[in-house]
Image (cartoon, rainbow, N blue to C red; front, side):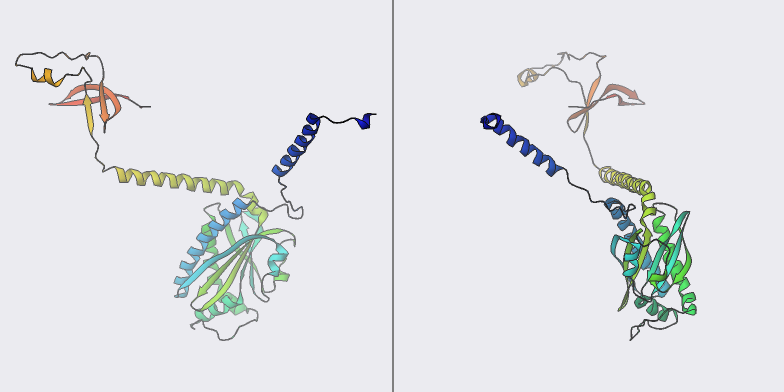
Length: 320
């Protein structure tokens, strides 16, 4: 019967080999997670580029706020991550100061949020106080206070616009104000946003500032991000080349033009007398070799320049 047939050793080895190959192939094929609810999520390399961009924004903003408030201000980038819009709003305090931002020439809105722990000390400083508030204030910002903060918002948006101009001409503008995160319905709850969290420290006072940018916009700018970093890399390479050239320009080298002919023993050299003639096996038409620090680099001929002898380069030599 066919079921009673004994397998040969070769058939057994073949079965195990196929099993090993299948296991190795499965190990090499790593599954990539994909969330169908968030098709607009961006790649990690682009997220790193946004991180660098907003690090520059944090440094610029720290300098601008120090001059505006006449006090030392430190701004640090805390995190850059992708969240759904509802997750982003749930992380914000209530009440708070939220601004919906237009992003011309693109459609859609971004979000700028400044925590009350940062807003009210800044208001205190703008009104002539020290910025030290003994108790935590949890109320909403009034219309008068909001108008006082307009100067602060202009500075923030100007530095943000300047930082983004390295990638694209993006104009941020204020469209509306809100105090309750849940009432700001500028994006769908499941729409992905790039959440940028920053900490601003003014003396002993510290507070958070958060920016939410739609991921779909960042994906649209993928090519511009790639161009910007490639240009930066090329610029860095050119600067490095200029730096190296600046360092080696004063260096001294030894340049020799030689007629490579026959050799002469010391005994024959000592036997030379006045009137003896030495024959050099070097044709007139043959080019002269020039060495740089002992290495052959050029070939050419000896010429006359005014009252001096000179060497005219006719060929560049690359030694193997």
